[in-house]
Length: 459
Image (tube, rainbow, N blue to C red; front, side, top):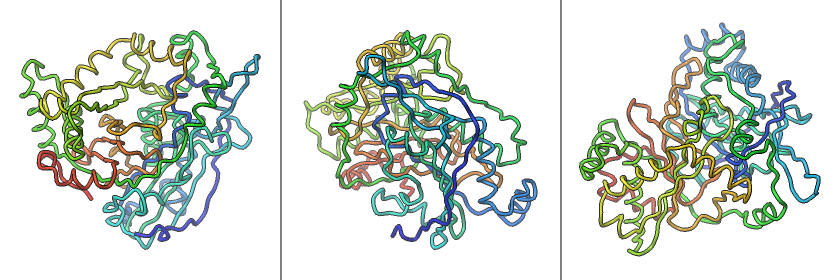
């Protein structure tokens, strides 16, 4: 499906006033050289009565104007999204501190209105290829990297009008927020769009990150030595691989069955294996089988661990920044194949349990501040997989005034062989698993009997 079926109608910059200077933490800074995050929601067109009610309530002439105006009102509560990345040099001249300047003269969020009237909701929903398909053209700022936030907007939103619906796609600098924080922003935008006065929101963000650095690193501002930045820049490249994406759906009944199967295979686990851990194990085993990874070769699954609830005292969910640290499980491919679903899921469960205290959080933050290590998807080894997103995020609750979305999609930002995006499905209790892998691996997984027994292919 050619990308030239989508045309830009207009672009504008949304500004709000702020003087805030937002310190960045190790959990933010480790993402400095990654691409911006791209996610989006697919909606049917509002019915004529819904559109009349929506526009009469807000006095907007069109739905595009309404979305832009409600976004503007939402950004007053989230000024970090309209700032720019800024730097300060150390007194010694050999280190750099990165921060977010919310009052930057050239700041503002980018709003793009695009025409995709040659396409339908079904066209977008059935497009699964991350390369030449239509999905990448639904997102602004393709290829932007977080370290380019000094000259690029930290948030760009593209609303594409389809023949029978809308696609709202956003590209956001990952230094600004993690998934927990950004979905709260989206929920707030939807809340204001539905008709909130805009004078307050139900979950106002906590913007300052100073205390996190002071508590966990002993300093407010973190300076990174030039040698670490130069080395990371040299390792930063764009992978030239033929990747594909596909969404697999697990119904509520299949999720329950999978979780029960994993726990039955590990009776000593006392039923502690979660649905997500069982899903990861199912997919991990399928990939290893399809790639014929030999016994004796290690394979790794990296799961972002939420730091908010693991800190002492805990950080509120409304903390608007990144608060995660890596949880890593490395296993022998032969053991994964030999021991089965329950055993693999139990290894994931053990890793999660071992990272339950505040000590692990402090260890990550303090060690990173002393010896920075940047996450770079370009350099990920073969058979290393990373989980993105979480089924805890309120994806399908984003009703902008005419009903919930019918699908969620990732853009091409930070795509790599091994990106696994899991989110709650449209049906309560179901899960959507968006898999980005080499084309031949993804084709083989769609034929894997054990895996396909639990899932359906959405596109």
